[in-house]
Amino acid sequence: MTKREELEIFIAKSEDLIQSKYILADVKIAGLLKAIAVSETLLALFKNCLSDYDYYKAQKTYLTKSNFSDTRGEFILPSSSKELLAFVFSTLIDIDAKKILLNEFLDKYFYVDGSSYSSYNLFINSMIKPFADTVISLMESVLDGKLQDPVEAFTEEEQKREQEAEDKRKQLQKEREISKKKYGESVKALKEILLIDKKKVKEKNFNSEEKERLTLIIDMLANVIDSCDRDAIIYAYSAYYYAVKSHQLLFFKRIKKTKKYILDVINEI
Image (spheres, helix red, strand yellow):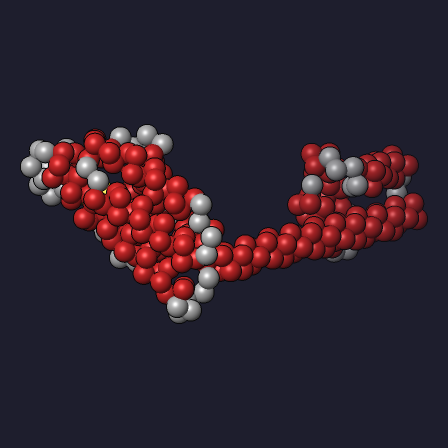
């Protein structure tokens, strides 16, 4: 179908709904939705409008409580074309799927004098006609070249979203690689420091018991530092921390130097 043919079918089906009696409303709504479904251009138009659309939030905005009744509400016409198309289309989908019962919907938000005829006329005039007129106006603008083809616009938007998703994926991958690199470098730096510490203990004039205690603490931390066992690392570093604190001259500025690397490792696990 050409775009003109798609538009003519939509016009015919929307007129069928507008001119129909209340008793035939369900059938006419289904016909209008089918006209949209078989139109590539209209489908793209509505997909653009529905992108990131919060229908349930919109219901609270456009189906409000009445100032004159505790049990009834009123329909507020959306101010933008995009909002109007998205909201009315979503509402028609719900009516067609019986998620919204038309008689209850009309009685609550389009109540006039208690008659179904009056409520239906208000529904048609305040919701359906503005919806149909907006679709027709936008489609005419597309046909005249004043607006971008909705299919092209939707394709561009999809490509944009895919590119953004790919860029985000690459950024996360890059961050993970940096994080892993940082983790690896921190583990390596810690092991080098611990090796130096162990050598200092060996060369220091400690009694055998103290040398054994300090060597055991240093070895324990060196052995668990790349184990990915967060609790074990924290426990081993705590023992190392207090051992170093008790020999500050021997292990000058060790706490400050090792704390940064330990945090890098723990935060990565």
